[in-house]
Amino acid sequence: MSKSVRLDKLLANLGYGSRREIQALAWGGRITLDGAALNDAGGRIALEADLPERMRIDGAPLDPLPGLCLMLHKPLGVTCSHKEAGPLVYGLLPERWRRRDPALSTVGRLDKETSGLLLLTDDGALLHRIISPKAKVAKRYQVTLDRPLRGDEAAALASGTLMLEGEDKPLLPVGFEGQDATHCAVTLHEGRYHQVRRMFAALGNHVTALHRDRVGGLDLPADLPAGECRVMRPAEIAAVFAPSA
Image (cartoon, rainbow, N blue to C red; front, side, top):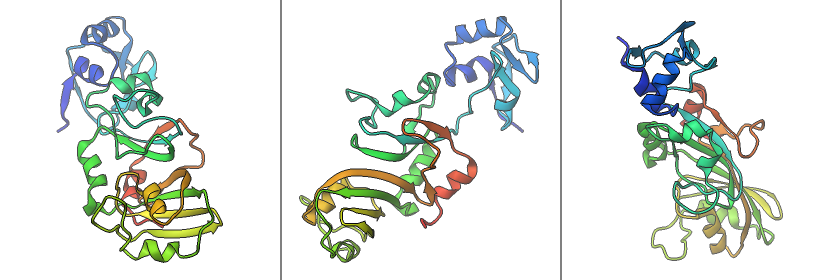
């Protein structure tokens, strides 16, 4: 049996406005279900998976129901925060999605000067499942360095003995793929503060550009431009938990 919810509560939680504003939409015949107008905003609606295809608001399909998971191509210069000054990743989302309840949150963070694949969800259980160390979700970064690689980086990063300044626990082994003198890819199995930048500093180098292109087994799509997002399909969510290629 499907769970049901009042229409005004559903639409208010999806960011369409206050309950009074939702009632005005209903009275105006602007909400339809299976082609029929819903004039009573206090009526109950079954929360079925196909509801976004069946319901229309001003002729447009209903936004995704709670359980939303997005992939965002984070550009440089935006911060993964609700409160910090300057451009925020949430400002890249459609305005209505910023008003959703439960709210969308980033799955982990990328710092202001790191670009690439960032996941967001309003599903707290899914968020914690992804970031849990037990899930072993790896993350791959494309790295540009200030100085040429020495040649011993792969062994040092794979050793499981590399220490970061100010810490007393060595890094877990890090995957390394050299590309040319100043470019490489690294795959992390943990998420320490500014880890990629700090570990190359420990190796006597300096990161000048950093881009995340894979989370778990999910690659950043080539057709997703910087600053844009899209709803993830179930297969893409499952790919996050698949072994990284």
